[in-house]
Length: 427
Image 1 (cartoon, rainbow, N blue to C red):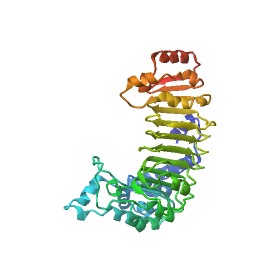
Image 2: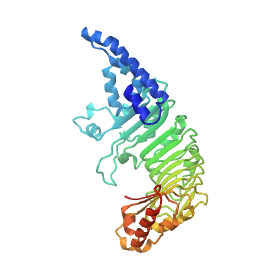
Image 3: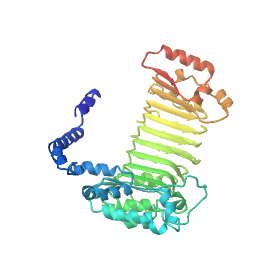
Image 4: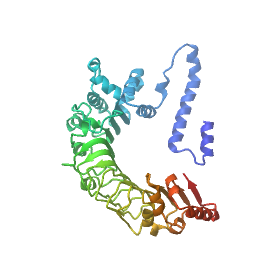
């Protein structure tokens, strides 16, 4: 108790209400142990110390286990843990590569319960509790699989609608967060209407994450309570993101990582505040229209046009392999931190020159390339004149290499004359 209070005092902030309650519960348990523990030890009795911990604490401990297999083992270890196992707020089911191989091997397949059956059984067990639940399903992908390899089986196709329909109705009322990492070798050639089924059943879902799947948006209905969406390594049948904008109007956090099937995608979300967008294929144009967006991380190859309509944007991290695009940035942009990575570094930096008075942190890096001679000839920007009010300048190793020698010297000399609040850092 003294050590905890001392740490809280030294950190400059008092313990939170939850922390004080935790300390009080721990001290009550310690006093109880001190009064009765010695007497029972003399009698040679063993005490079940787990039952003295508060139920919410035990449920939280169980929710932090690696997967449902560890949860099942804990249920066998203690009656207290068994009674609380259905109240855990978070559960993860993971099919390892070893389990997958054993389920396919003739000598062991009869002794391994199918993974999808485990999911259905666990859903039935968890449905007895009324509390909110975060559920994650994942299948491990082979470490080295050919790009064109497919698996005709469906025992690990986790976004299959018939599979979801078996267990999702049992947990729909409890679910607040759902994450599904599908098995790509089985899902890559099977379009799924999983989004439509989830929208029909999970009306209180707040967070949704889907990875390694082919998703259709047919018959997709709006999910007004969903505030966070992650789609990663997805083939999406929504070329311009029209359905995403229409059916997820309350999104505050959006992560689109290597989502294929896009042509002229436009993000138009009025409540969006944080966005990470990695575009791996060639698209005609990229547009982000989000009046409340404050943080954007954008990585693309070579779009023909890029438009940002984000007046409150304060942190921007943009990576463009080849800057041949027409980049349109709103005049009212409120940038404070800017990171640029491009093979045409100077041209992209010039786009944001009219926001130079608001930018306080600037980070530059050249996109990985072996054509350093061409890059040196193109990079002629005067950083200190273009961005005179920056407090911190970070140069990546390739950016440092391609900047002209006289520019490096001038930059170093001028920053040495600036007061201690400013800094130049080389990474």
